[in-house]
Image (tube, rainbow over the protein chains, first blue to last red):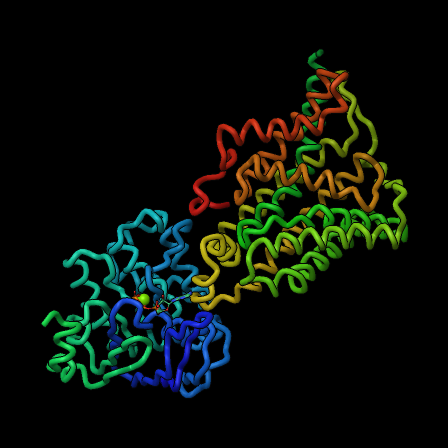
Length: 230
Length: 297
Ligand SMILES: Nc1ncnc2c1ncn2[C@@H]1O[C@H](COP(=O)(O)OP(=O)(O)OP(=O)(O)O)[C@@H](O)[C@H]1O
Ligand SMILES: [Mg+2]
């Protein structure tokens, strides 16, 4: 579904991502784990051209390396960004409308689907995005991405800053979503992420140092020591 | 001051305020999406007034001439964005500001070179300039029509901002351009809509100015633009309702200062800015403005 080949991102002289290659197959959840500053966010942002990059990216059989961000999203590759980036000055409903910008004729249908998945949002339709709790904002961020009817989803630290109970909910939702679309997931919470994943990549200082089936990574001593708390 | 004169000045103030309000909306909307104080905006108003004037001279009917002025202003407004501002989207904001000042000088000088600096008389149709009287109040009809048109337009702008997907995207842009792109939205297209809307309203403001004064010149946009900008800041830059409120407050202040203290008439512009400073001392974000990161528009 998604193929990335020799991806590089530089911020001035700093090289944040170096020659990364990865692949997400249909029906899979793939996790990218790595310490703070390893280059995870930069990788996702580079795939959708939010940051400048070099390298080749193919999505759904099409070369999207040079496409504008909004064109990539329109092709069905959606990114739920780090920090959720809810439009705090728009209501919940308007946030969903933004997500459905190119599908506005199906708005009602898509919204029903999202509210079924996130019943808690339904009670907050007219509340400003900025007044939602962290967990609700994460639900809204995922819901907003689903409003675009994507073929694949990329999630950047969806559990960041959430209470353990809510984190559990978020992971359940991600597992649910797997039935509908492949997912590329970034998580600090490496253990929980690998448990629901099919495949994983370990990122260190901008390079991939290890990749394997998620199951194998969970059993890998080095990974356990570094990312799974021993 | 008799009641008649008071009412007369009230209507005059509303009319002048309308003009500021129409121009202020463009300042505030462009600021909302680009964080740019578009110093060329007053000159877009001048362009609108000039093109209307030329259309009238070519003996087009008044309403059609106004449409020509509006269309021309929209084109110039969009072109400024495409040619001058768009290449600077990721440049420091100060570069954008300097560019805006450059565009302003360019338009003023271009029109001076092409059409001369002598003011040109603006002939509005008789149905607008005709004086009528009720209860001893004498007013040209335009003074009544201008505020009514302005309020109707404000309602239209708010409808666009809150009820259409493009309008919601304009408000979303005030939060963050990258996130808007992540929604699959072509942000440049939305910014183009903002420039088109702002320029159209400015052109209309320019026509109202030309009807009221009734002459136009290439530098007419400077002081009016500055005052409309003051109105936008007074109302809380980023807020459309605030811009309209600020415009009306400035219009009323100016008219009443002249009416009540004729000796101070020469200082009427100074009063406008004095009032602005006073409000900002007590409410730095302007009347309707809030925390810069929240409740825009
Ligand atoms: N806009 C930027 N300008 C300059 N340097 C940047 C920028 N964004 C990220 N970096 C640097 O690039 C490196 C990788 O950052 P990135 O955000 O991709 O890491 P990450 O793996 O997502 O980290 P985290 O787990 O903290 O989110 C870091 O050293 C960071 O300081
Ligand atoms: Mg990150």
